[in-house]
Image 1 (cartoon, helix red, strand yellow):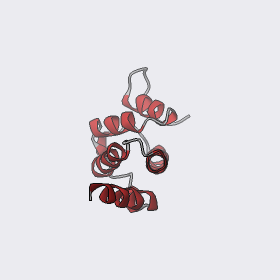
Image 2 (cartoon, rainbow, N blue to C red):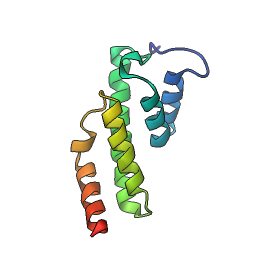
Image 3 (cartoon, helix red, strand yellow):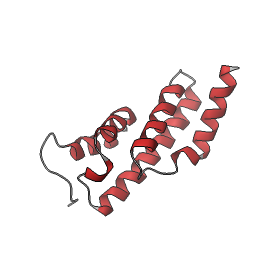
Image 4 (cartoon, rainbow, N blue to C red):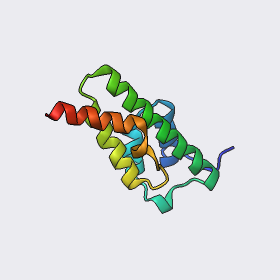
Length: 110
C-alpha cells in the first residue's frame, strides 16, 4: 500500500483521483496548493506521481495539438505552472510535445 496520507479529503487522495481521471487542471491546482517539501508522499510515490504528471501533460499537449479546439493555450499554461511549482515534474517543457505546442502557438499569433 502506498505511503500517502489517509482520509477522504487529503490532498494526496485528491491528487491521485485527478491523475486517475486524467484531469490535468485539477492536478495542477492541487500541486500548486501543496508546497513541494510538504507533499504527503514517500520518495517512491513522489517518483510515480512525477512520471504520471509528466505523461498526462504530454498526452494533453498531443490532444490539444490534434483537436485545435482552443485548449492549447490552457494546457501550455498548466504545464508551465506545474513545472514551476512542482519541482519533481521535470522535463515537461523539454518534451517534443511542448516544443510543437509552442511552435503552433507562435504560428497562430502571427
